[in-house]
Length: 314
Ligand SMILES: Cc1cc2nc3c(=O)[nH]c(=O)nc-3n(C[C@H](O)[C@H](O)[C@H](O)COP(=O)(O)O)c2cc1C
Image (cartoon, rainbow, N blue to C red; front, side, top):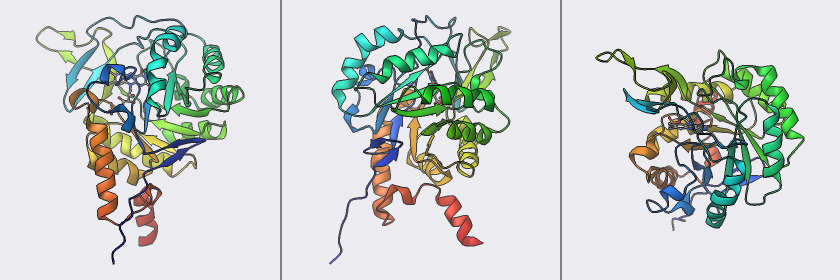
Protein backbone atom coordinates (compact mmCIF):
# COMPACT_ATOMS: atom_id res chain seq x y z
CA UNK A 1 0.00 0.00 0.00
CA UNK A 2 1.36 3.45 -0.92
CA UNK A 3 1.70 5.68 2.13
CA UNK A 4 0.67 9.28 1.44
CA UNK A 5 2.42 11.67 3.81
CA UNK A 6 1.89 15.41 3.48
CA UNK A 7 5.12 17.29 2.80
CA UNK A 8 6.43 19.38 5.67
CA UNK A 9 6.69 23.01 4.57
CA UNK A 10 7.83 24.42 7.89
CA UNK A 11 11.18 26.17 8.23
CA UNK A 12 13.21 27.72 11.03
CA UNK A 13 14.71 31.18 10.79
CA UNK A 14 16.70 31.66 14.00
CA UNK A 15 14.20 31.07 16.82
CA UNK A 16 11.30 31.74 14.49
CA UNK A 17 9.26 28.82 13.19
CA UNK A 18 7.27 29.41 9.99
CA UNK A 19 4.54 26.95 8.98
CA UNK A 20 5.54 27.56 5.38
CA UNK A 21 8.42 29.51 3.81
CA UNK A 22 6.44 32.08 1.82
CA UNK A 23 6.27 35.65 3.10
CA UNK A 24 5.33 38.98 1.60
CA UNK A 25 8.12 41.50 1.06
CA UNK A 26 8.40 44.77 2.93
CA UNK A 27 6.73 47.73 1.25
CA UNK A 28 4.64 45.71 -1.17
CA UNK A 29 1.90 44.64 1.23
CA UNK A 30 1.37 47.68 3.42
CA UNK A 31 0.43 46.56 6.93
CA UNK A 32 -1.61 43.64 5.51
CA UNK A 33 -5.04 45.02 6.46
CA UNK A 34 -5.16 46.61 2.99
CA UNK A 35 -5.03 43.08 1.50
CA UNK A 36 -7.39 41.39 3.96
CA UNK A 37 -10.38 41.31 1.58
CA UNK A 38 -8.27 39.82 -1.21
CA UNK A 39 -6.76 36.70 0.36
CA UNK A 40 -6.70 34.58 3.51
CA UNK A 41 -3.77 36.26 5.28
CA UNK A 42 -3.56 33.53 7.93
CA UNK A 43 -2.20 31.10 5.32
CA UNK A 44 0.97 33.15 4.75
CA UNK A 45 4.24 31.93 6.29
CA UNK A 46 4.88 35.44 7.65
CA UNK A 47 4.18 39.08 6.93
CA UNK A 48 6.98 41.63 6.67
CA UNK A 49 5.65 45.12 7.33
CA UNK A 50 6.42 48.27 5.38
CA UNK A 51 9.62 49.74 6.87
CA UNK A 52 8.99 51.85 9.97
CA UNK A 53 11.07 54.78 11.17
CA UNK A 54 10.93 56.58 14.53
CA UNK A 55 9.05 59.61 13.19
CA UNK A 56 6.31 59.52 10.54
CA UNK A 57 7.60 60.13 7.00
CA UNK A 58 5.67 61.64 4.11
CA UNK A 59 7.88 60.00 1.50
CA UNK A 60 9.27 61.31 -1.78
CA UNK A 61 7.86 63.55 -4.50
CA UNK A 62 5.31 61.89 -6.83
CA UNK A 63 5.16 60.17 -9.21
CA UNK A 64 6.64 57.46 -7.00
CA UNK A 65 6.31 54.47 -9.28
CA UNK A 66 6.49 53.69 -12.97
CA UNK A 67 6.40 50.57 -15.05
CA UNK A 68 9.59 49.43 -16.77
CA UNK A 69 10.29 46.43 -19.03
CA UNK A 70 9.44 43.36 -16.93
CA UNK A 71 9.42 45.37 -13.73
CA UNK A 72 8.83 48.65 -11.99
CA UNK A 73 10.77 51.54 -10.52
CA UNK A 74 9.75 52.94 -7.17
CA UNK A 75 10.85 55.76 -5.00
CA UNK A 76 8.35 55.74 -2.15
CA UNK A 77 10.91 57.24 0.21
CA UNK A 78 9.84 55.11 3.18
CA UNK A 79 6.48 56.78 3.74
CA UNK A 80 5.25 55.37 7.05
CA UNK A 81 3.26 56.45 10.12
CA UNK A 82 6.21 56.21 12.57
CA UNK A 83 6.76 53.62 15.27
CA UNK A 84 4.23 54.90 17.84
CA UNK A 85 1.39 55.06 15.32
CA UNK A 86 2.38 51.68 13.96
CA UNK A 87 2.21 50.08 17.40
CA UNK A 88 -1.09 51.77 18.25
CA UNK A 89 -2.95 51.55 14.94
CA UNK A 90 -1.43 48.83 12.73
CA UNK A 91 -0.07 46.15 15.05
CA UNK A 92 -3.41 45.19 16.70
CA UNK A 93 -4.76 43.95 13.34
CA UNK A 94 -1.55 42.05 12.56
CA UNK A 95 -1.48 40.49 16.03
CA UNK A 96 -4.94 38.99 15.55
CA UNK A 97 -3.78 37.02 12.48
CA UNK A 98 -1.77 34.62 14.64
CA UNK A 99 1.07 34.29 12.10
CA UNK A 100 4.64 35.56 12.52
CA UNK A 101 4.95 39.32 12.07
CA UNK A 102 8.33 40.64 11.00
CA UNK A 103 8.71 44.37 11.55
CA UNK A 104 11.04 46.13 9.13
CA UNK A 105 12.85 49.18 10.51
CA UNK A 106 15.17 51.87 9.21
CA UNK A 107 17.07 54.90 10.46
CA UNK A 108 16.60 58.28 8.77
CA UNK A 109 19.78 60.08 9.82
CA UNK A 110 21.69 58.25 12.50
CA UNK A 111 22.27 54.49 12.95
CA UNK A 112 21.48 55.09 16.65
CA UNK A 113 17.80 55.29 15.64
CA UNK A 114 17.94 51.53 15.11
CA UNK A 115 18.71 51.06 18.81
CA UNK A 116 15.64 53.08 19.85
CA UNK A 117 13.38 51.16 17.44
CA UNK A 118 14.72 47.76 18.50
CA UNK A 119 14.40 48.74 22.17
CA UNK A 120 10.69 49.48 21.63
CA UNK A 121 9.90 46.43 19.49
CA UNK A 122 11.80 44.02 21.72
CA UNK A 123 9.18 44.49 24.46
CA UNK A 124 6.22 43.60 22.22
CA UNK A 125 5.28 39.91 22.10
CA UNK A 126 3.27 40.34 18.87
CA UNK A 127 6.54 41.17 17.08
CA UNK A 128 8.11 37.87 16.04
CA UNK A 129 11.21 39.20 14.32
CA UNK A 130 12.92 42.44 13.36
CA UNK A 131 14.24 43.13 9.86
CA UNK A 132 16.98 45.74 9.65
CA UNK A 133 16.45 47.62 6.42
CA UNK A 134 19.96 48.93 5.81
CA UNK A 135 19.49 48.83 2.06
CA UNK A 136 16.77 51.31 1.03
CA UNK A 137 17.98 53.09 -2.13
CA UNK A 138 15.44 55.92 -1.77
CA UNK A 139 16.79 57.86 1.18
CA UNK A 140 19.02 60.46 -0.57
CA UNK A 141 22.09 59.04 1.15
CA UNK A 142 25.43 58.73 -0.60
CA UNK A 143 26.20 55.40 0.97
CA UNK A 144 24.00 52.81 2.65
CA UNK A 145 25.07 50.82 5.70
CA UNK A 146 24.72 47.62 3.70
CA UNK A 147 27.20 48.89 1.15
CA UNK A 148 29.99 48.62 3.70
CA UNK A 149 30.90 45.38 5.50
CA UNK A 150 32.40 47.17 8.52
CA UNK A 151 29.35 49.39 9.01
CA UNK A 152 27.05 46.39 8.60
CA UNK A 153 29.01 44.49 11.18
CA UNK A 154 29.06 47.40 13.65
CA UNK A 155 25.31 47.96 13.37
CA UNK A 156 24.28 44.31 13.59
CA UNK A 157 26.53 43.58 16.57
CA UNK A 158 25.21 46.62 18.48
CA UNK A 159 21.59 45.71 17.75
CA UNK A 160 22.23 42.05 18.60
CA UNK A 161 22.97 43.05 22.20
CA UNK A 162 19.54 44.67 22.50
CA UNK A 163 17.23 41.81 21.56
CA UNK A 164 16.86 38.05 21.59
CA UNK A 165 14.17 38.25 18.92
CA UNK A 166 15.02 36.85 15.52
CA UNK A 167 17.13 39.43 13.68
CA UNK A 168 17.10 39.60 9.89
CA UNK A 169 19.41 41.89 7.91
CA UNK A 170 18.09 43.08 4.53
CA UNK A 171 20.85 43.56 2.00
CA UNK A 172 21.36 45.75 -1.03
CA UNK A 173 22.26 44.39 -4.46
CA UNK A 174 24.00 47.69 -5.23
CA UNK A 175 27.39 46.39 -4.08
CA UNK A 176 30.45 44.66 -5.50
CA UNK A 177 30.16 41.53 -3.36
CA UNK A 178 26.89 40.83 -1.55
CA UNK A 179 28.31 37.65 -0.02
CA UNK A 180 30.97 39.67 1.85
CA UNK A 181 28.22 41.83 3.36
CA UNK A 182 26.14 38.74 4.17
CA UNK A 183 29.15 37.24 5.94
CA UNK A 184 29.64 40.44 7.94
CA UNK A 185 25.98 40.33 9.02
CA UNK A 186 26.25 36.65 9.98
CA UNK A 187 29.47 37.09 11.97
CA UNK A 188 27.96 40.05 13.83
CA UNK A 189 25.04 37.94 15.03
CA UNK A 190 22.27 38.26 12.45
CA UNK A 191 19.99 35.19 12.47
CA UNK A 192 19.28 35.47 8.74
CA UNK A 193 19.80 37.71 5.74
CA UNK A 194 17.08 38.88 3.34
CA UNK A 195 18.13 39.63 -0.21
CA UNK A 196 17.72 41.47 -2.47
CA UNK A 197 16.36 44.94 -1.99
CA UNK A 198 15.79 46.89 -5.20
CA UNK A 199 18.48 47.68 -7.76
CA UNK A 200 19.20 51.35 -8.27
CA UNK A 201 17.71 52.51 -11.59
CA UNK A 202 16.39 55.38 -13.69
CA UNK A 203 13.88 55.75 -16.53
CA UNK A 204 13.38 58.76 -18.84
CA UNK A 205 10.27 59.79 -20.78
CA UNK A 206 11.94 60.91 -24.01
CA UNK A 207 8.81 62.72 -25.27
CA UNK A 208 8.83 64.99 -22.23
CA UNK A 209 12.60 64.80 -21.71
CA UNK A 210 11.87 64.17 -18.04
CA UNK A 211 12.55 61.40 -15.56
CA UNK A 212 9.56 59.12 -15.01
CA UNK A 213 9.69 59.34 -11.22
CA UNK A 214 9.79 62.40 -9.00
CA UNK A 215 13.10 61.65 -7.36
CA UNK A 216 14.67 60.81 -10.72
CA UNK A 217 16.39 57.70 -9.40
CA UNK A 218 14.54 54.78 -7.81
CA UNK A 219 14.63 51.07 -7.04
CA UNK A 220 14.03 48.49 -9.76
CA UNK A 221 12.04 45.36 -8.85
CA UNK A 222 10.06 42.60 -10.54
CA UNK A 223 11.00 39.81 -12.97
CA UNK A 224 13.65 42.02 -14.61
CA UNK A 225 15.88 41.64 -11.54
CA UNK A 226 15.31 37.93 -10.92
CA UNK A 227 18.52 36.57 -12.51
CA UNK A 228 20.55 39.10 -10.52
CA UNK A 229 18.76 38.11 -7.31
CA UNK A 230 19.12 34.37 -7.91
CA UNK A 231 22.86 34.81 -8.52
CA UNK A 232 23.23 36.82 -5.34
CA UNK A 233 21.38 34.20 -3.28
CA UNK A 234 23.66 31.57 -4.82
CA UNK A 235 26.79 33.57 -3.95
CA UNK A 236 25.65 34.17 -0.38
CA UNK A 237 24.65 30.51 0.06
CA UNK A 238 28.17 29.47 -0.85
CA UNK A 239 29.64 31.75 1.80
CA UNK A 240 27.34 31.79 4.85
CA UNK A 241 25.63 29.30 7.14
CA UNK A 242 22.62 31.30 8.36
CA UNK A 243 19.29 31.10 6.47
CA UNK A 244 18.72 33.26 3.41
CA UNK A 245 15.33 34.79 2.66
CA UNK A 246 15.42 35.15 -1.11
CA UNK A 247 13.47 37.65 -3.18
CA UNK A 248 13.54 39.60 -6.42
CA UNK A 249 11.02 39.03 -9.18
CA UNK A 250 9.28 35.96 -7.77
CA UNK A 251 6.04 35.64 -9.77
CA UNK A 252 5.02 31.99 -9.56
CA UNK A 253 6.05 28.55 -8.32
CA UNK A 254 8.84 28.07 -10.89
CA UNK A 255 10.50 31.35 -10.04
CA UNK A 256 10.10 30.56 -6.32
CA UNK A 257 11.83 27.20 -6.87
CA UNK A 258 14.78 28.97 -8.51
CA UNK A 259 15.36 30.77 -5.22
CA UNK A 260 15.15 27.58 -3.15
CA UNK A 261 17.49 25.70 -5.48
CA UNK A 262 19.98 28.60 -5.30
CA UNK A 263 20.00 28.39 -1.49
CA UNK A 264 17.02 30.19 0.05
CA UNK A 265 15.44 28.76 3.18
CA UNK A 266 12.41 31.03 2.73
CA UNK A 267 11.22 33.49 0.09
CA UNK A 268 9.47 36.85 -0.08
CA UNK A 269 7.03 37.92 -2.75
CA UNK A 270 7.08 41.63 -3.61
CA UNK A 271 6.09 43.30 -6.87
CA UNK A 272 3.93 40.31 -7.88
CA UNK A 273 1.45 41.32 -5.13
CA UNK A 274 0.48 44.36 -7.23
CA UNK A 275 -0.51 42.11 -10.15
CA UNK A 276 -2.00 39.18 -8.28
CA UNK A 277 -2.53 39.63 -4.53
CA UNK A 278 -3.19 35.91 -4.10
CA UNK A 279 0.10 34.85 -5.69
CA UNK A 280 1.79 33.92 -2.39
CA UNK A 281 -0.97 31.44 -1.60
CA UNK A 282 -0.67 29.98 -5.11
CA UNK A 283 3.07 29.53 -4.51
CA UNK A 284 2.41 27.73 -1.19
CA UNK A 285 0.05 25.31 -2.99
CA UNK A 286 2.56 24.97 -5.83
CA UNK A 287 5.32 24.06 -3.38
CA UNK A 288 3.15 21.43 -1.74
CA UNK A 289 2.36 19.94 -5.16
CA UNK A 290 5.98 20.04 -6.30
CA UNK A 291 7.11 18.24 -3.15
CA UNK A 292 4.32 15.66 -3.32
CA UNK A 293 4.95 14.97 -7.02
CA UNK A 294 8.68 14.54 -6.40
CA UNK A 295 8.42 12.55 -3.17
CA UNK A 296 10.11 15.29 -1.13
CA UNK A 297 8.92 15.31 2.46
CA UNK A 298 11.04 18.09 3.89
CA UNK A 299 11.58 21.54 2.42
CA UNK A 300 15.20 21.52 3.60
CA UNK A 301 15.82 18.99 0.83
CA UNK A 302 15.26 21.60 -1.86
CA UNK A 303 17.21 24.48 -0.28
CA UNK A 304 20.51 24.60 -2.16
CA UNK A 305 19.50 21.71 -4.41
CA UNK A 306 21.66 23.14 -7.20
CA UNK A 307 24.79 22.83 -5.04
CA UNK A 308 23.86 19.31 -4.01
CA UNK A 309 23.53 18.38 -7.72
CA UNK A 310 26.86 20.11 -8.47
CA UNK A 311 28.60 18.23 -5.63
CA UNK A 312 27.16 14.91 -6.84
CA UNK A 313 28.42 15.56 -10.38
CA UNK A 314 32.03 15.90 -9.12
C1 LIG B 1 6.71 49.82 -4.06
C2 LIG B 1 7.80 49.14 -3.29
C3 LIG B 1 8.08 49.56 -1.99
C4 LIG B 1 9.10 48.94 -1.26
N1 LIG B 1 9.34 49.32 0.03
C5 LIG B 1 10.26 48.67 0.77
C6 LIG B 1 10.44 48.97 2.14
O1 LIG B 1 9.76 49.81 2.73
N2 LIG B 1 11.40 48.29 2.83
C7 LIG B 1 12.18 47.30 2.24
O2 LIG B 1 13.03 46.70 2.91
N3 LIG B 1 12.00 46.98 0.93
C8 LIG B 1 11.07 47.63 0.20
N4 LIG B 1 10.87 47.28 -1.10
C9 LIG B 1 11.71 46.22 -1.71
C10 LIG B 1 11.02 44.85 -1.66
O3 LIG B 1 10.77 44.45 -0.34
C11 LIG B 1 11.89 43.77 -2.36
O4 LIG B 1 13.12 43.65 -1.68
C12 LIG B 1 12.19 44.11 -3.82
O5 LIG B 1 11.11 44.78 -4.42
C13 LIG B 1 12.56 42.88 -4.65
O6 LIG B 1 11.49 41.96 -4.69
P1 LIG B 1 10.37 41.94 -5.87
O7 LIG B 1 11.11 42.01 -7.17
O8 LIG B 1 9.64 40.66 -5.67
O9 LIG B 1 9.52 43.13 -5.66
C14 LIG B 1 9.87 47.89 -1.85
C15 LIG B 1 9.57 47.49 -3.16
C16 LIG B 1 8.55 48.09 -3.89
C17 LIG B 1 8.27 47.61 -5.28
